[in-house]
Amino acid sequence: MKKRILIFDDDQSILDVFKIIFGENGYDVEISKTSHDILERVREFTPDLILMDNWIPEIGGIGALKLLKSCENYRNIPVIYISANSDISSLAKSAQANDFIAKPFDLNKLERMVEKFL
Image (cartoon, rainbow, N blue to C red; front, side, top):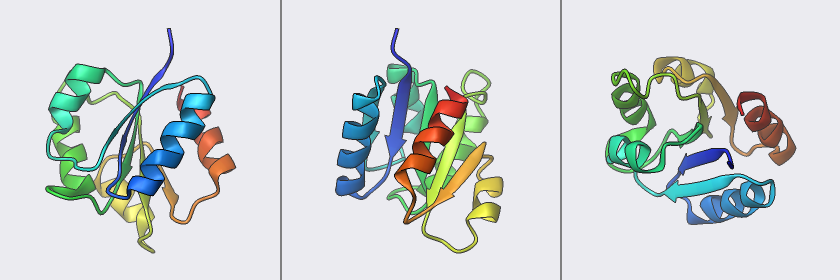
């Protein structure tokens, strides 16, 4: 069975690139431009990994991940936090993410990071 990646980002071009790249790498990919429905999306898609943008509409990346991590069934899903913020390390820590990558990112580095968790 294919590993599943759920991606939250408000930039459609980034979502399109991620869907193509990770789809070509053999992953099942689901995307979302908002994060307010993270619990429903996770319940429906059952991802093996989540990529979360910091600046995403509705409740933002930190709020969405705090919701996710508060649910016992979902708190162990690995999360890679993505942001153009210069303080991404502390943002990722606050969001309880497993790892982070800064925008603009090196796609090869992101692919290796994803492989590490999957």
